[in-house]
Image (cartoon, rainbow, N blue to C red):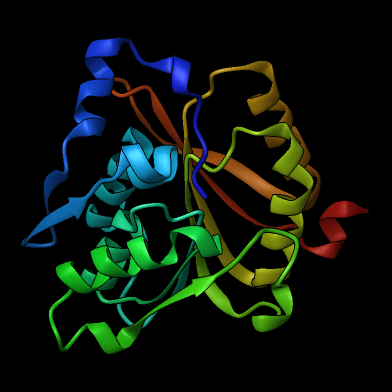
Length: 218
């Protein structure tokens, strides 16, 4: 799931997480995301990285129509919902414990003609990868998935498995601690990485990554 530190926000900033609904406008749709901080904690609220990544997709930074996309650690599902509204076929993933909550947000916010293009599916990084095909997706999306150092190896394994040589990864995050930069260093060993966007108001970076071609590693 999307993991971020509780202590990062002042008490006043946390108030928005206790609201049962968070409302956004993307892709000419009003999106109402149900939140459940009390029951599911950090996995069930909308973090700034998801808003910034959704805005970036809406800007047309990548071609989404007909694209096969997957969202990792989806939490509330906002990014995957926006990608679907913009024309992508999306697999929205998180751990088993959050799936019913995630499905409720997807079903509540996607018109009936778009829902068949979206699948909500369990994915625990580094574990049940066999239920996916290697290199299955054109686009891999992650918002605030870089935080717990113990998950870095599994996340990298998952990215490597899901990517083909032509896949694009978009990761939105805040750089809070040294370990966040450590992950980017680890990512750069397998992927060509560049920063493509920064939102100064929310202090969120977006990084684009693609698998390194073999000759680049020589």
